[in-house]
Image (cartoon, rainbow, N blue to C red; front, side):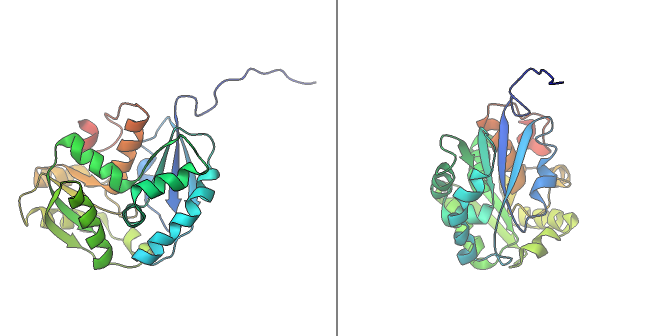
Length: 242
């Protein structure tokens, strides 16, 4: 027999989110799974080169419309690459996504970090990256263009994205503490969606006495904010407690 059924708004009826994840990323999805618990979070992957250089980062812009089109209807799309968002530019990232997803809210880790700094009243930022010097310099310039002052800096200086995914969290904790000790700062930002940090954020904040932001932390927080969803308790650290 033919069965009857009722229709509703589906799994994403109370706000749906889309996440564009790099082909080589092994960290973003596991870390954001708890942030979006009980929310519809849909993933799509974008091809990227294994080496992180300005040229390989810029090349992703051409694929953004196609991979965004593979997402179902969502309210917010997060593009999960801090360094590529810096190189391509947040406006160009959003424009590329809007070619196939018009009207959707778009964010990325560097835009989300800038928004988080404004939310927390951060002016002086200690900065940790895993990147080669050329990529780190571009990101520092972007942050400073918004009025932030980079008071301290340190990098793991890795070009291979797979190597970044395997940096132990205790090494990230040590790096955050070392850079925070260099000069007075209002917060520490550890960049890269492939760099693990959720497990040490609260320990790092206790050790340094200041907020600790990561790319994934800021991205998840900002995506929820853009959808008008309360963020308290959905992630670790002071940003989600603010």
